[in-house]
Length: 374
Image (tube, rainbow, N blue to C red):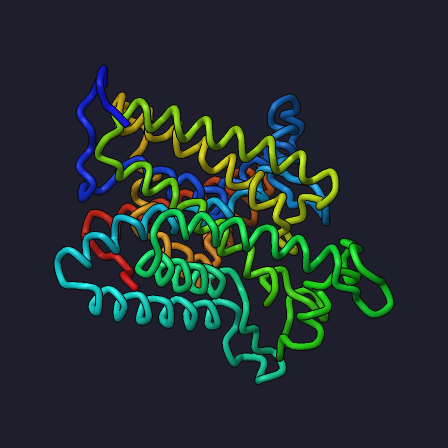
C-alpha cells in the first residue's frame, strides 16, 4: 500500500513507541489505585459522570462488559504489540536462537512471579494457585512469540480464527455432565468443568478459575490481536495517519462483530469467550489508535509523565502493589483523627494519598532507571 499524501514521516520500526508506554501506564493506572478514588468520590455523592464511571470500574458478575473488564485483555493486547518490536530487534541483533532463549526465560520468570503474586507456598500446596494474571500473560507471551517466530502473517491469521472458532465450538457442542452442551452459565460450562477436573491445587472461584486452563486458548487470540496491531504499526508502506485509520476501523469492526456474536456466545470475561476477545480487542485497537494519534503523531505529551512512569515499569509496580498496601501505608500517616475529621471525605483522602505513593515510587524508579526487566 502506498504512503502517498502522508503528513508526518513514518516512525522507524525499531523506535520505541511512546504511545504504547503511555497506554500501558493508563491501563495500569486503574489497577494501582485510580479506581479507589472514583469509588470514594461516588461514596460522597459526587453523582453524574462519577457514578457512571464508578459503575464501569466494577467487574460484571458474569455476562456483560464494563470498562474494568477491559483492563486485563488490554494489557494482553499490548503484550502482543510489544513483542512484534522486541522480537524483531533481538532477531536482527542476535539471531533467532537468542530470541527463543529470551522468550523461554522471560516466560518462565513471569510465570514464577505470578505464582509468588498469588501467594506462593504460604498456604501450602493446597493453597498454591498456579494460574493467575501474570501466569496467563506469561503463557500468552510464550506461545504468541513462538508463533510469530515460526509463522507468516497469513498463518497467524488462520491460528487466530481457529482459536476463536475452536473455542466457540468446544463450549457450544461438547456436553458437560449435568448441564449438557451450550450452557454458558457459571459452573455449567466446559471451561469451568475442565478446571474442575484438571486444574490442580487452589482455584480462585472454588472449583474453577477465571484464568483457567481452557480459557487460555482465546486469551492467546487476544495477544495475537495485539500482534496484528504491532505489525500494522511496524509497516513501512503506511503513513502514521493511515495506521490510525486502519487501527480505528479494524477496532470498530471487531467490536461490532463481537457484540453480534455475543447474542449467541455471550461476552463473559471469566471464561474469556470468543465474543469477549473481539469486544475487548476492538476497544483495545481503538484506544491504541487514539493514543498513537495524540502522543506519537500530534506529540501532545505534557499529560503523559505519570503514565510513562508506570508504563515502562509495569511488572515492578504491579508486584510492589501486591507486597505493599499503599492505602494502608497512607492510613498510618493520615488516618485516625485526620481521616475521621474529614467525615465522608476521609476515604477520598486515603485513596488519593495511596495512589500518590504509588506514583512517587514509579517516578523514583524511572528517574533512576531502575526497571524490573524479565
